[in-house]
Image 1 (cartoon, helix red, strand yellow):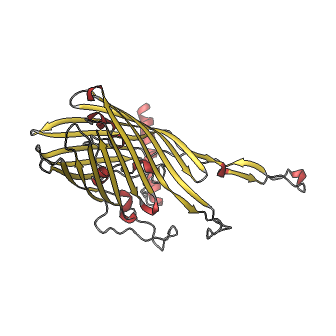
Image 2: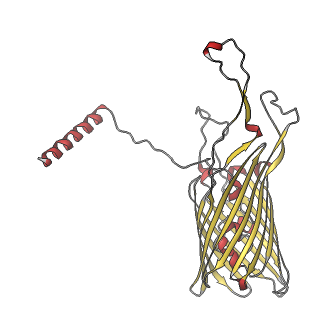
Image 3: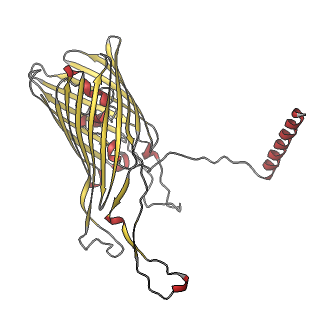
Length: 381
C-alpha cells in the first residue's frame, strides 16, 4: 500500500513538471553573490611596507622583519634584533597612507612583541550641499582612519611559529566616527626541498566586530504629523538621531609559499606565490620574485623585486551608456600593467651586531585607479 502511494506521488510530480514545461521554457538565472562594496575600513588591506608592496602583497611566507605585524604576525618571532619601520605613500585621489611599527624580540629570540599605528585619509575638502553646490561657503571636512595594533609572536620549534595582532580601529568621516576591534592570526612553516629553504604561511586578517558610525552630524529635526483632531495646531519639530548601517571589516584569508631557487652567503633569489580569499570581492593570486646580493665587504645589500597580482575588481565592466544603470564612466581598459608591482631596496649594516639602516621603494599599478609609489625607511639595532 505504501509503495502504491509513493508511485502515485511520483506520477503527480512528473505530470506537474511536464505541464510546467509545456507552458514555458524553464530558464536558469545567473547570479553573483560576491559581496562587493559591503565592508568598511578598506585601508586595512593597503600594503604596509615598500618591500611587501613591490612583491604585490604576497609577502606573508617570507617576512621576518617589523612589517610582520601587518603581513603575518608569526614572522615577528623570526626577527633577530629590535627594529623600527616607517612607510609613506600618496595614494589615489589625493589621499595619503602612513604606517609606523616597532618590534622587540625577547626570551632569547623565541618570542617577540610589536606595536604599530596606521593612518589613512585626507583633509580640508570642501563641503558641497544643495544650498552651496560650488562649496563657496568655506566649509570643509576631513577623513582620518586609524588602526592601533599590538602583536605577540612565538617560535614553537625551529620550523613553526605563530602570532596574533590585536587591532583597535577608529574611522572618522567628517563629524561622525565609527570604532571596531579586530584580530589577525598567522602561522609560518619552514622546511627544505632539494637542500634549499621553502616556507609556507596561513594568515587570516581583520576578523572582528562590525563598524557603525555615530556623531553630531546624525542629529536632525523631524517635523511631526499632528493628531487627527489637531490638524490646525502647529507642532514643534522633534529632535532625533539617524541610525547608520553596521559595516563588516574586510576579512581576508591568505595562503602563501616561498622557495629559494638559490641561496649563498652573498646572494639569494626567492620566488613567491599567494592565494587570497577576501569577503568583499573575488579570490586573487599573486606571483613575485626577489633577488638580493651583498656588495662585497662594504656592508651594503642590494635587492630587486618584481610581482604581479590579479585584480578581480578591475575586470568588472560598468554599465554602458545605453543602460539605465550607466554611471557616467566607460568600460575598464587595461594596458597590460594592471596588477604589476616592482621595486628595490638598499640596506647597510657593517657590523652584524651594530646599527642597520634600510631604504625601500615600491611602484604598484592599480588598473583604472592609476599607479602609486611607496617609500619605507628602517632602523635596527
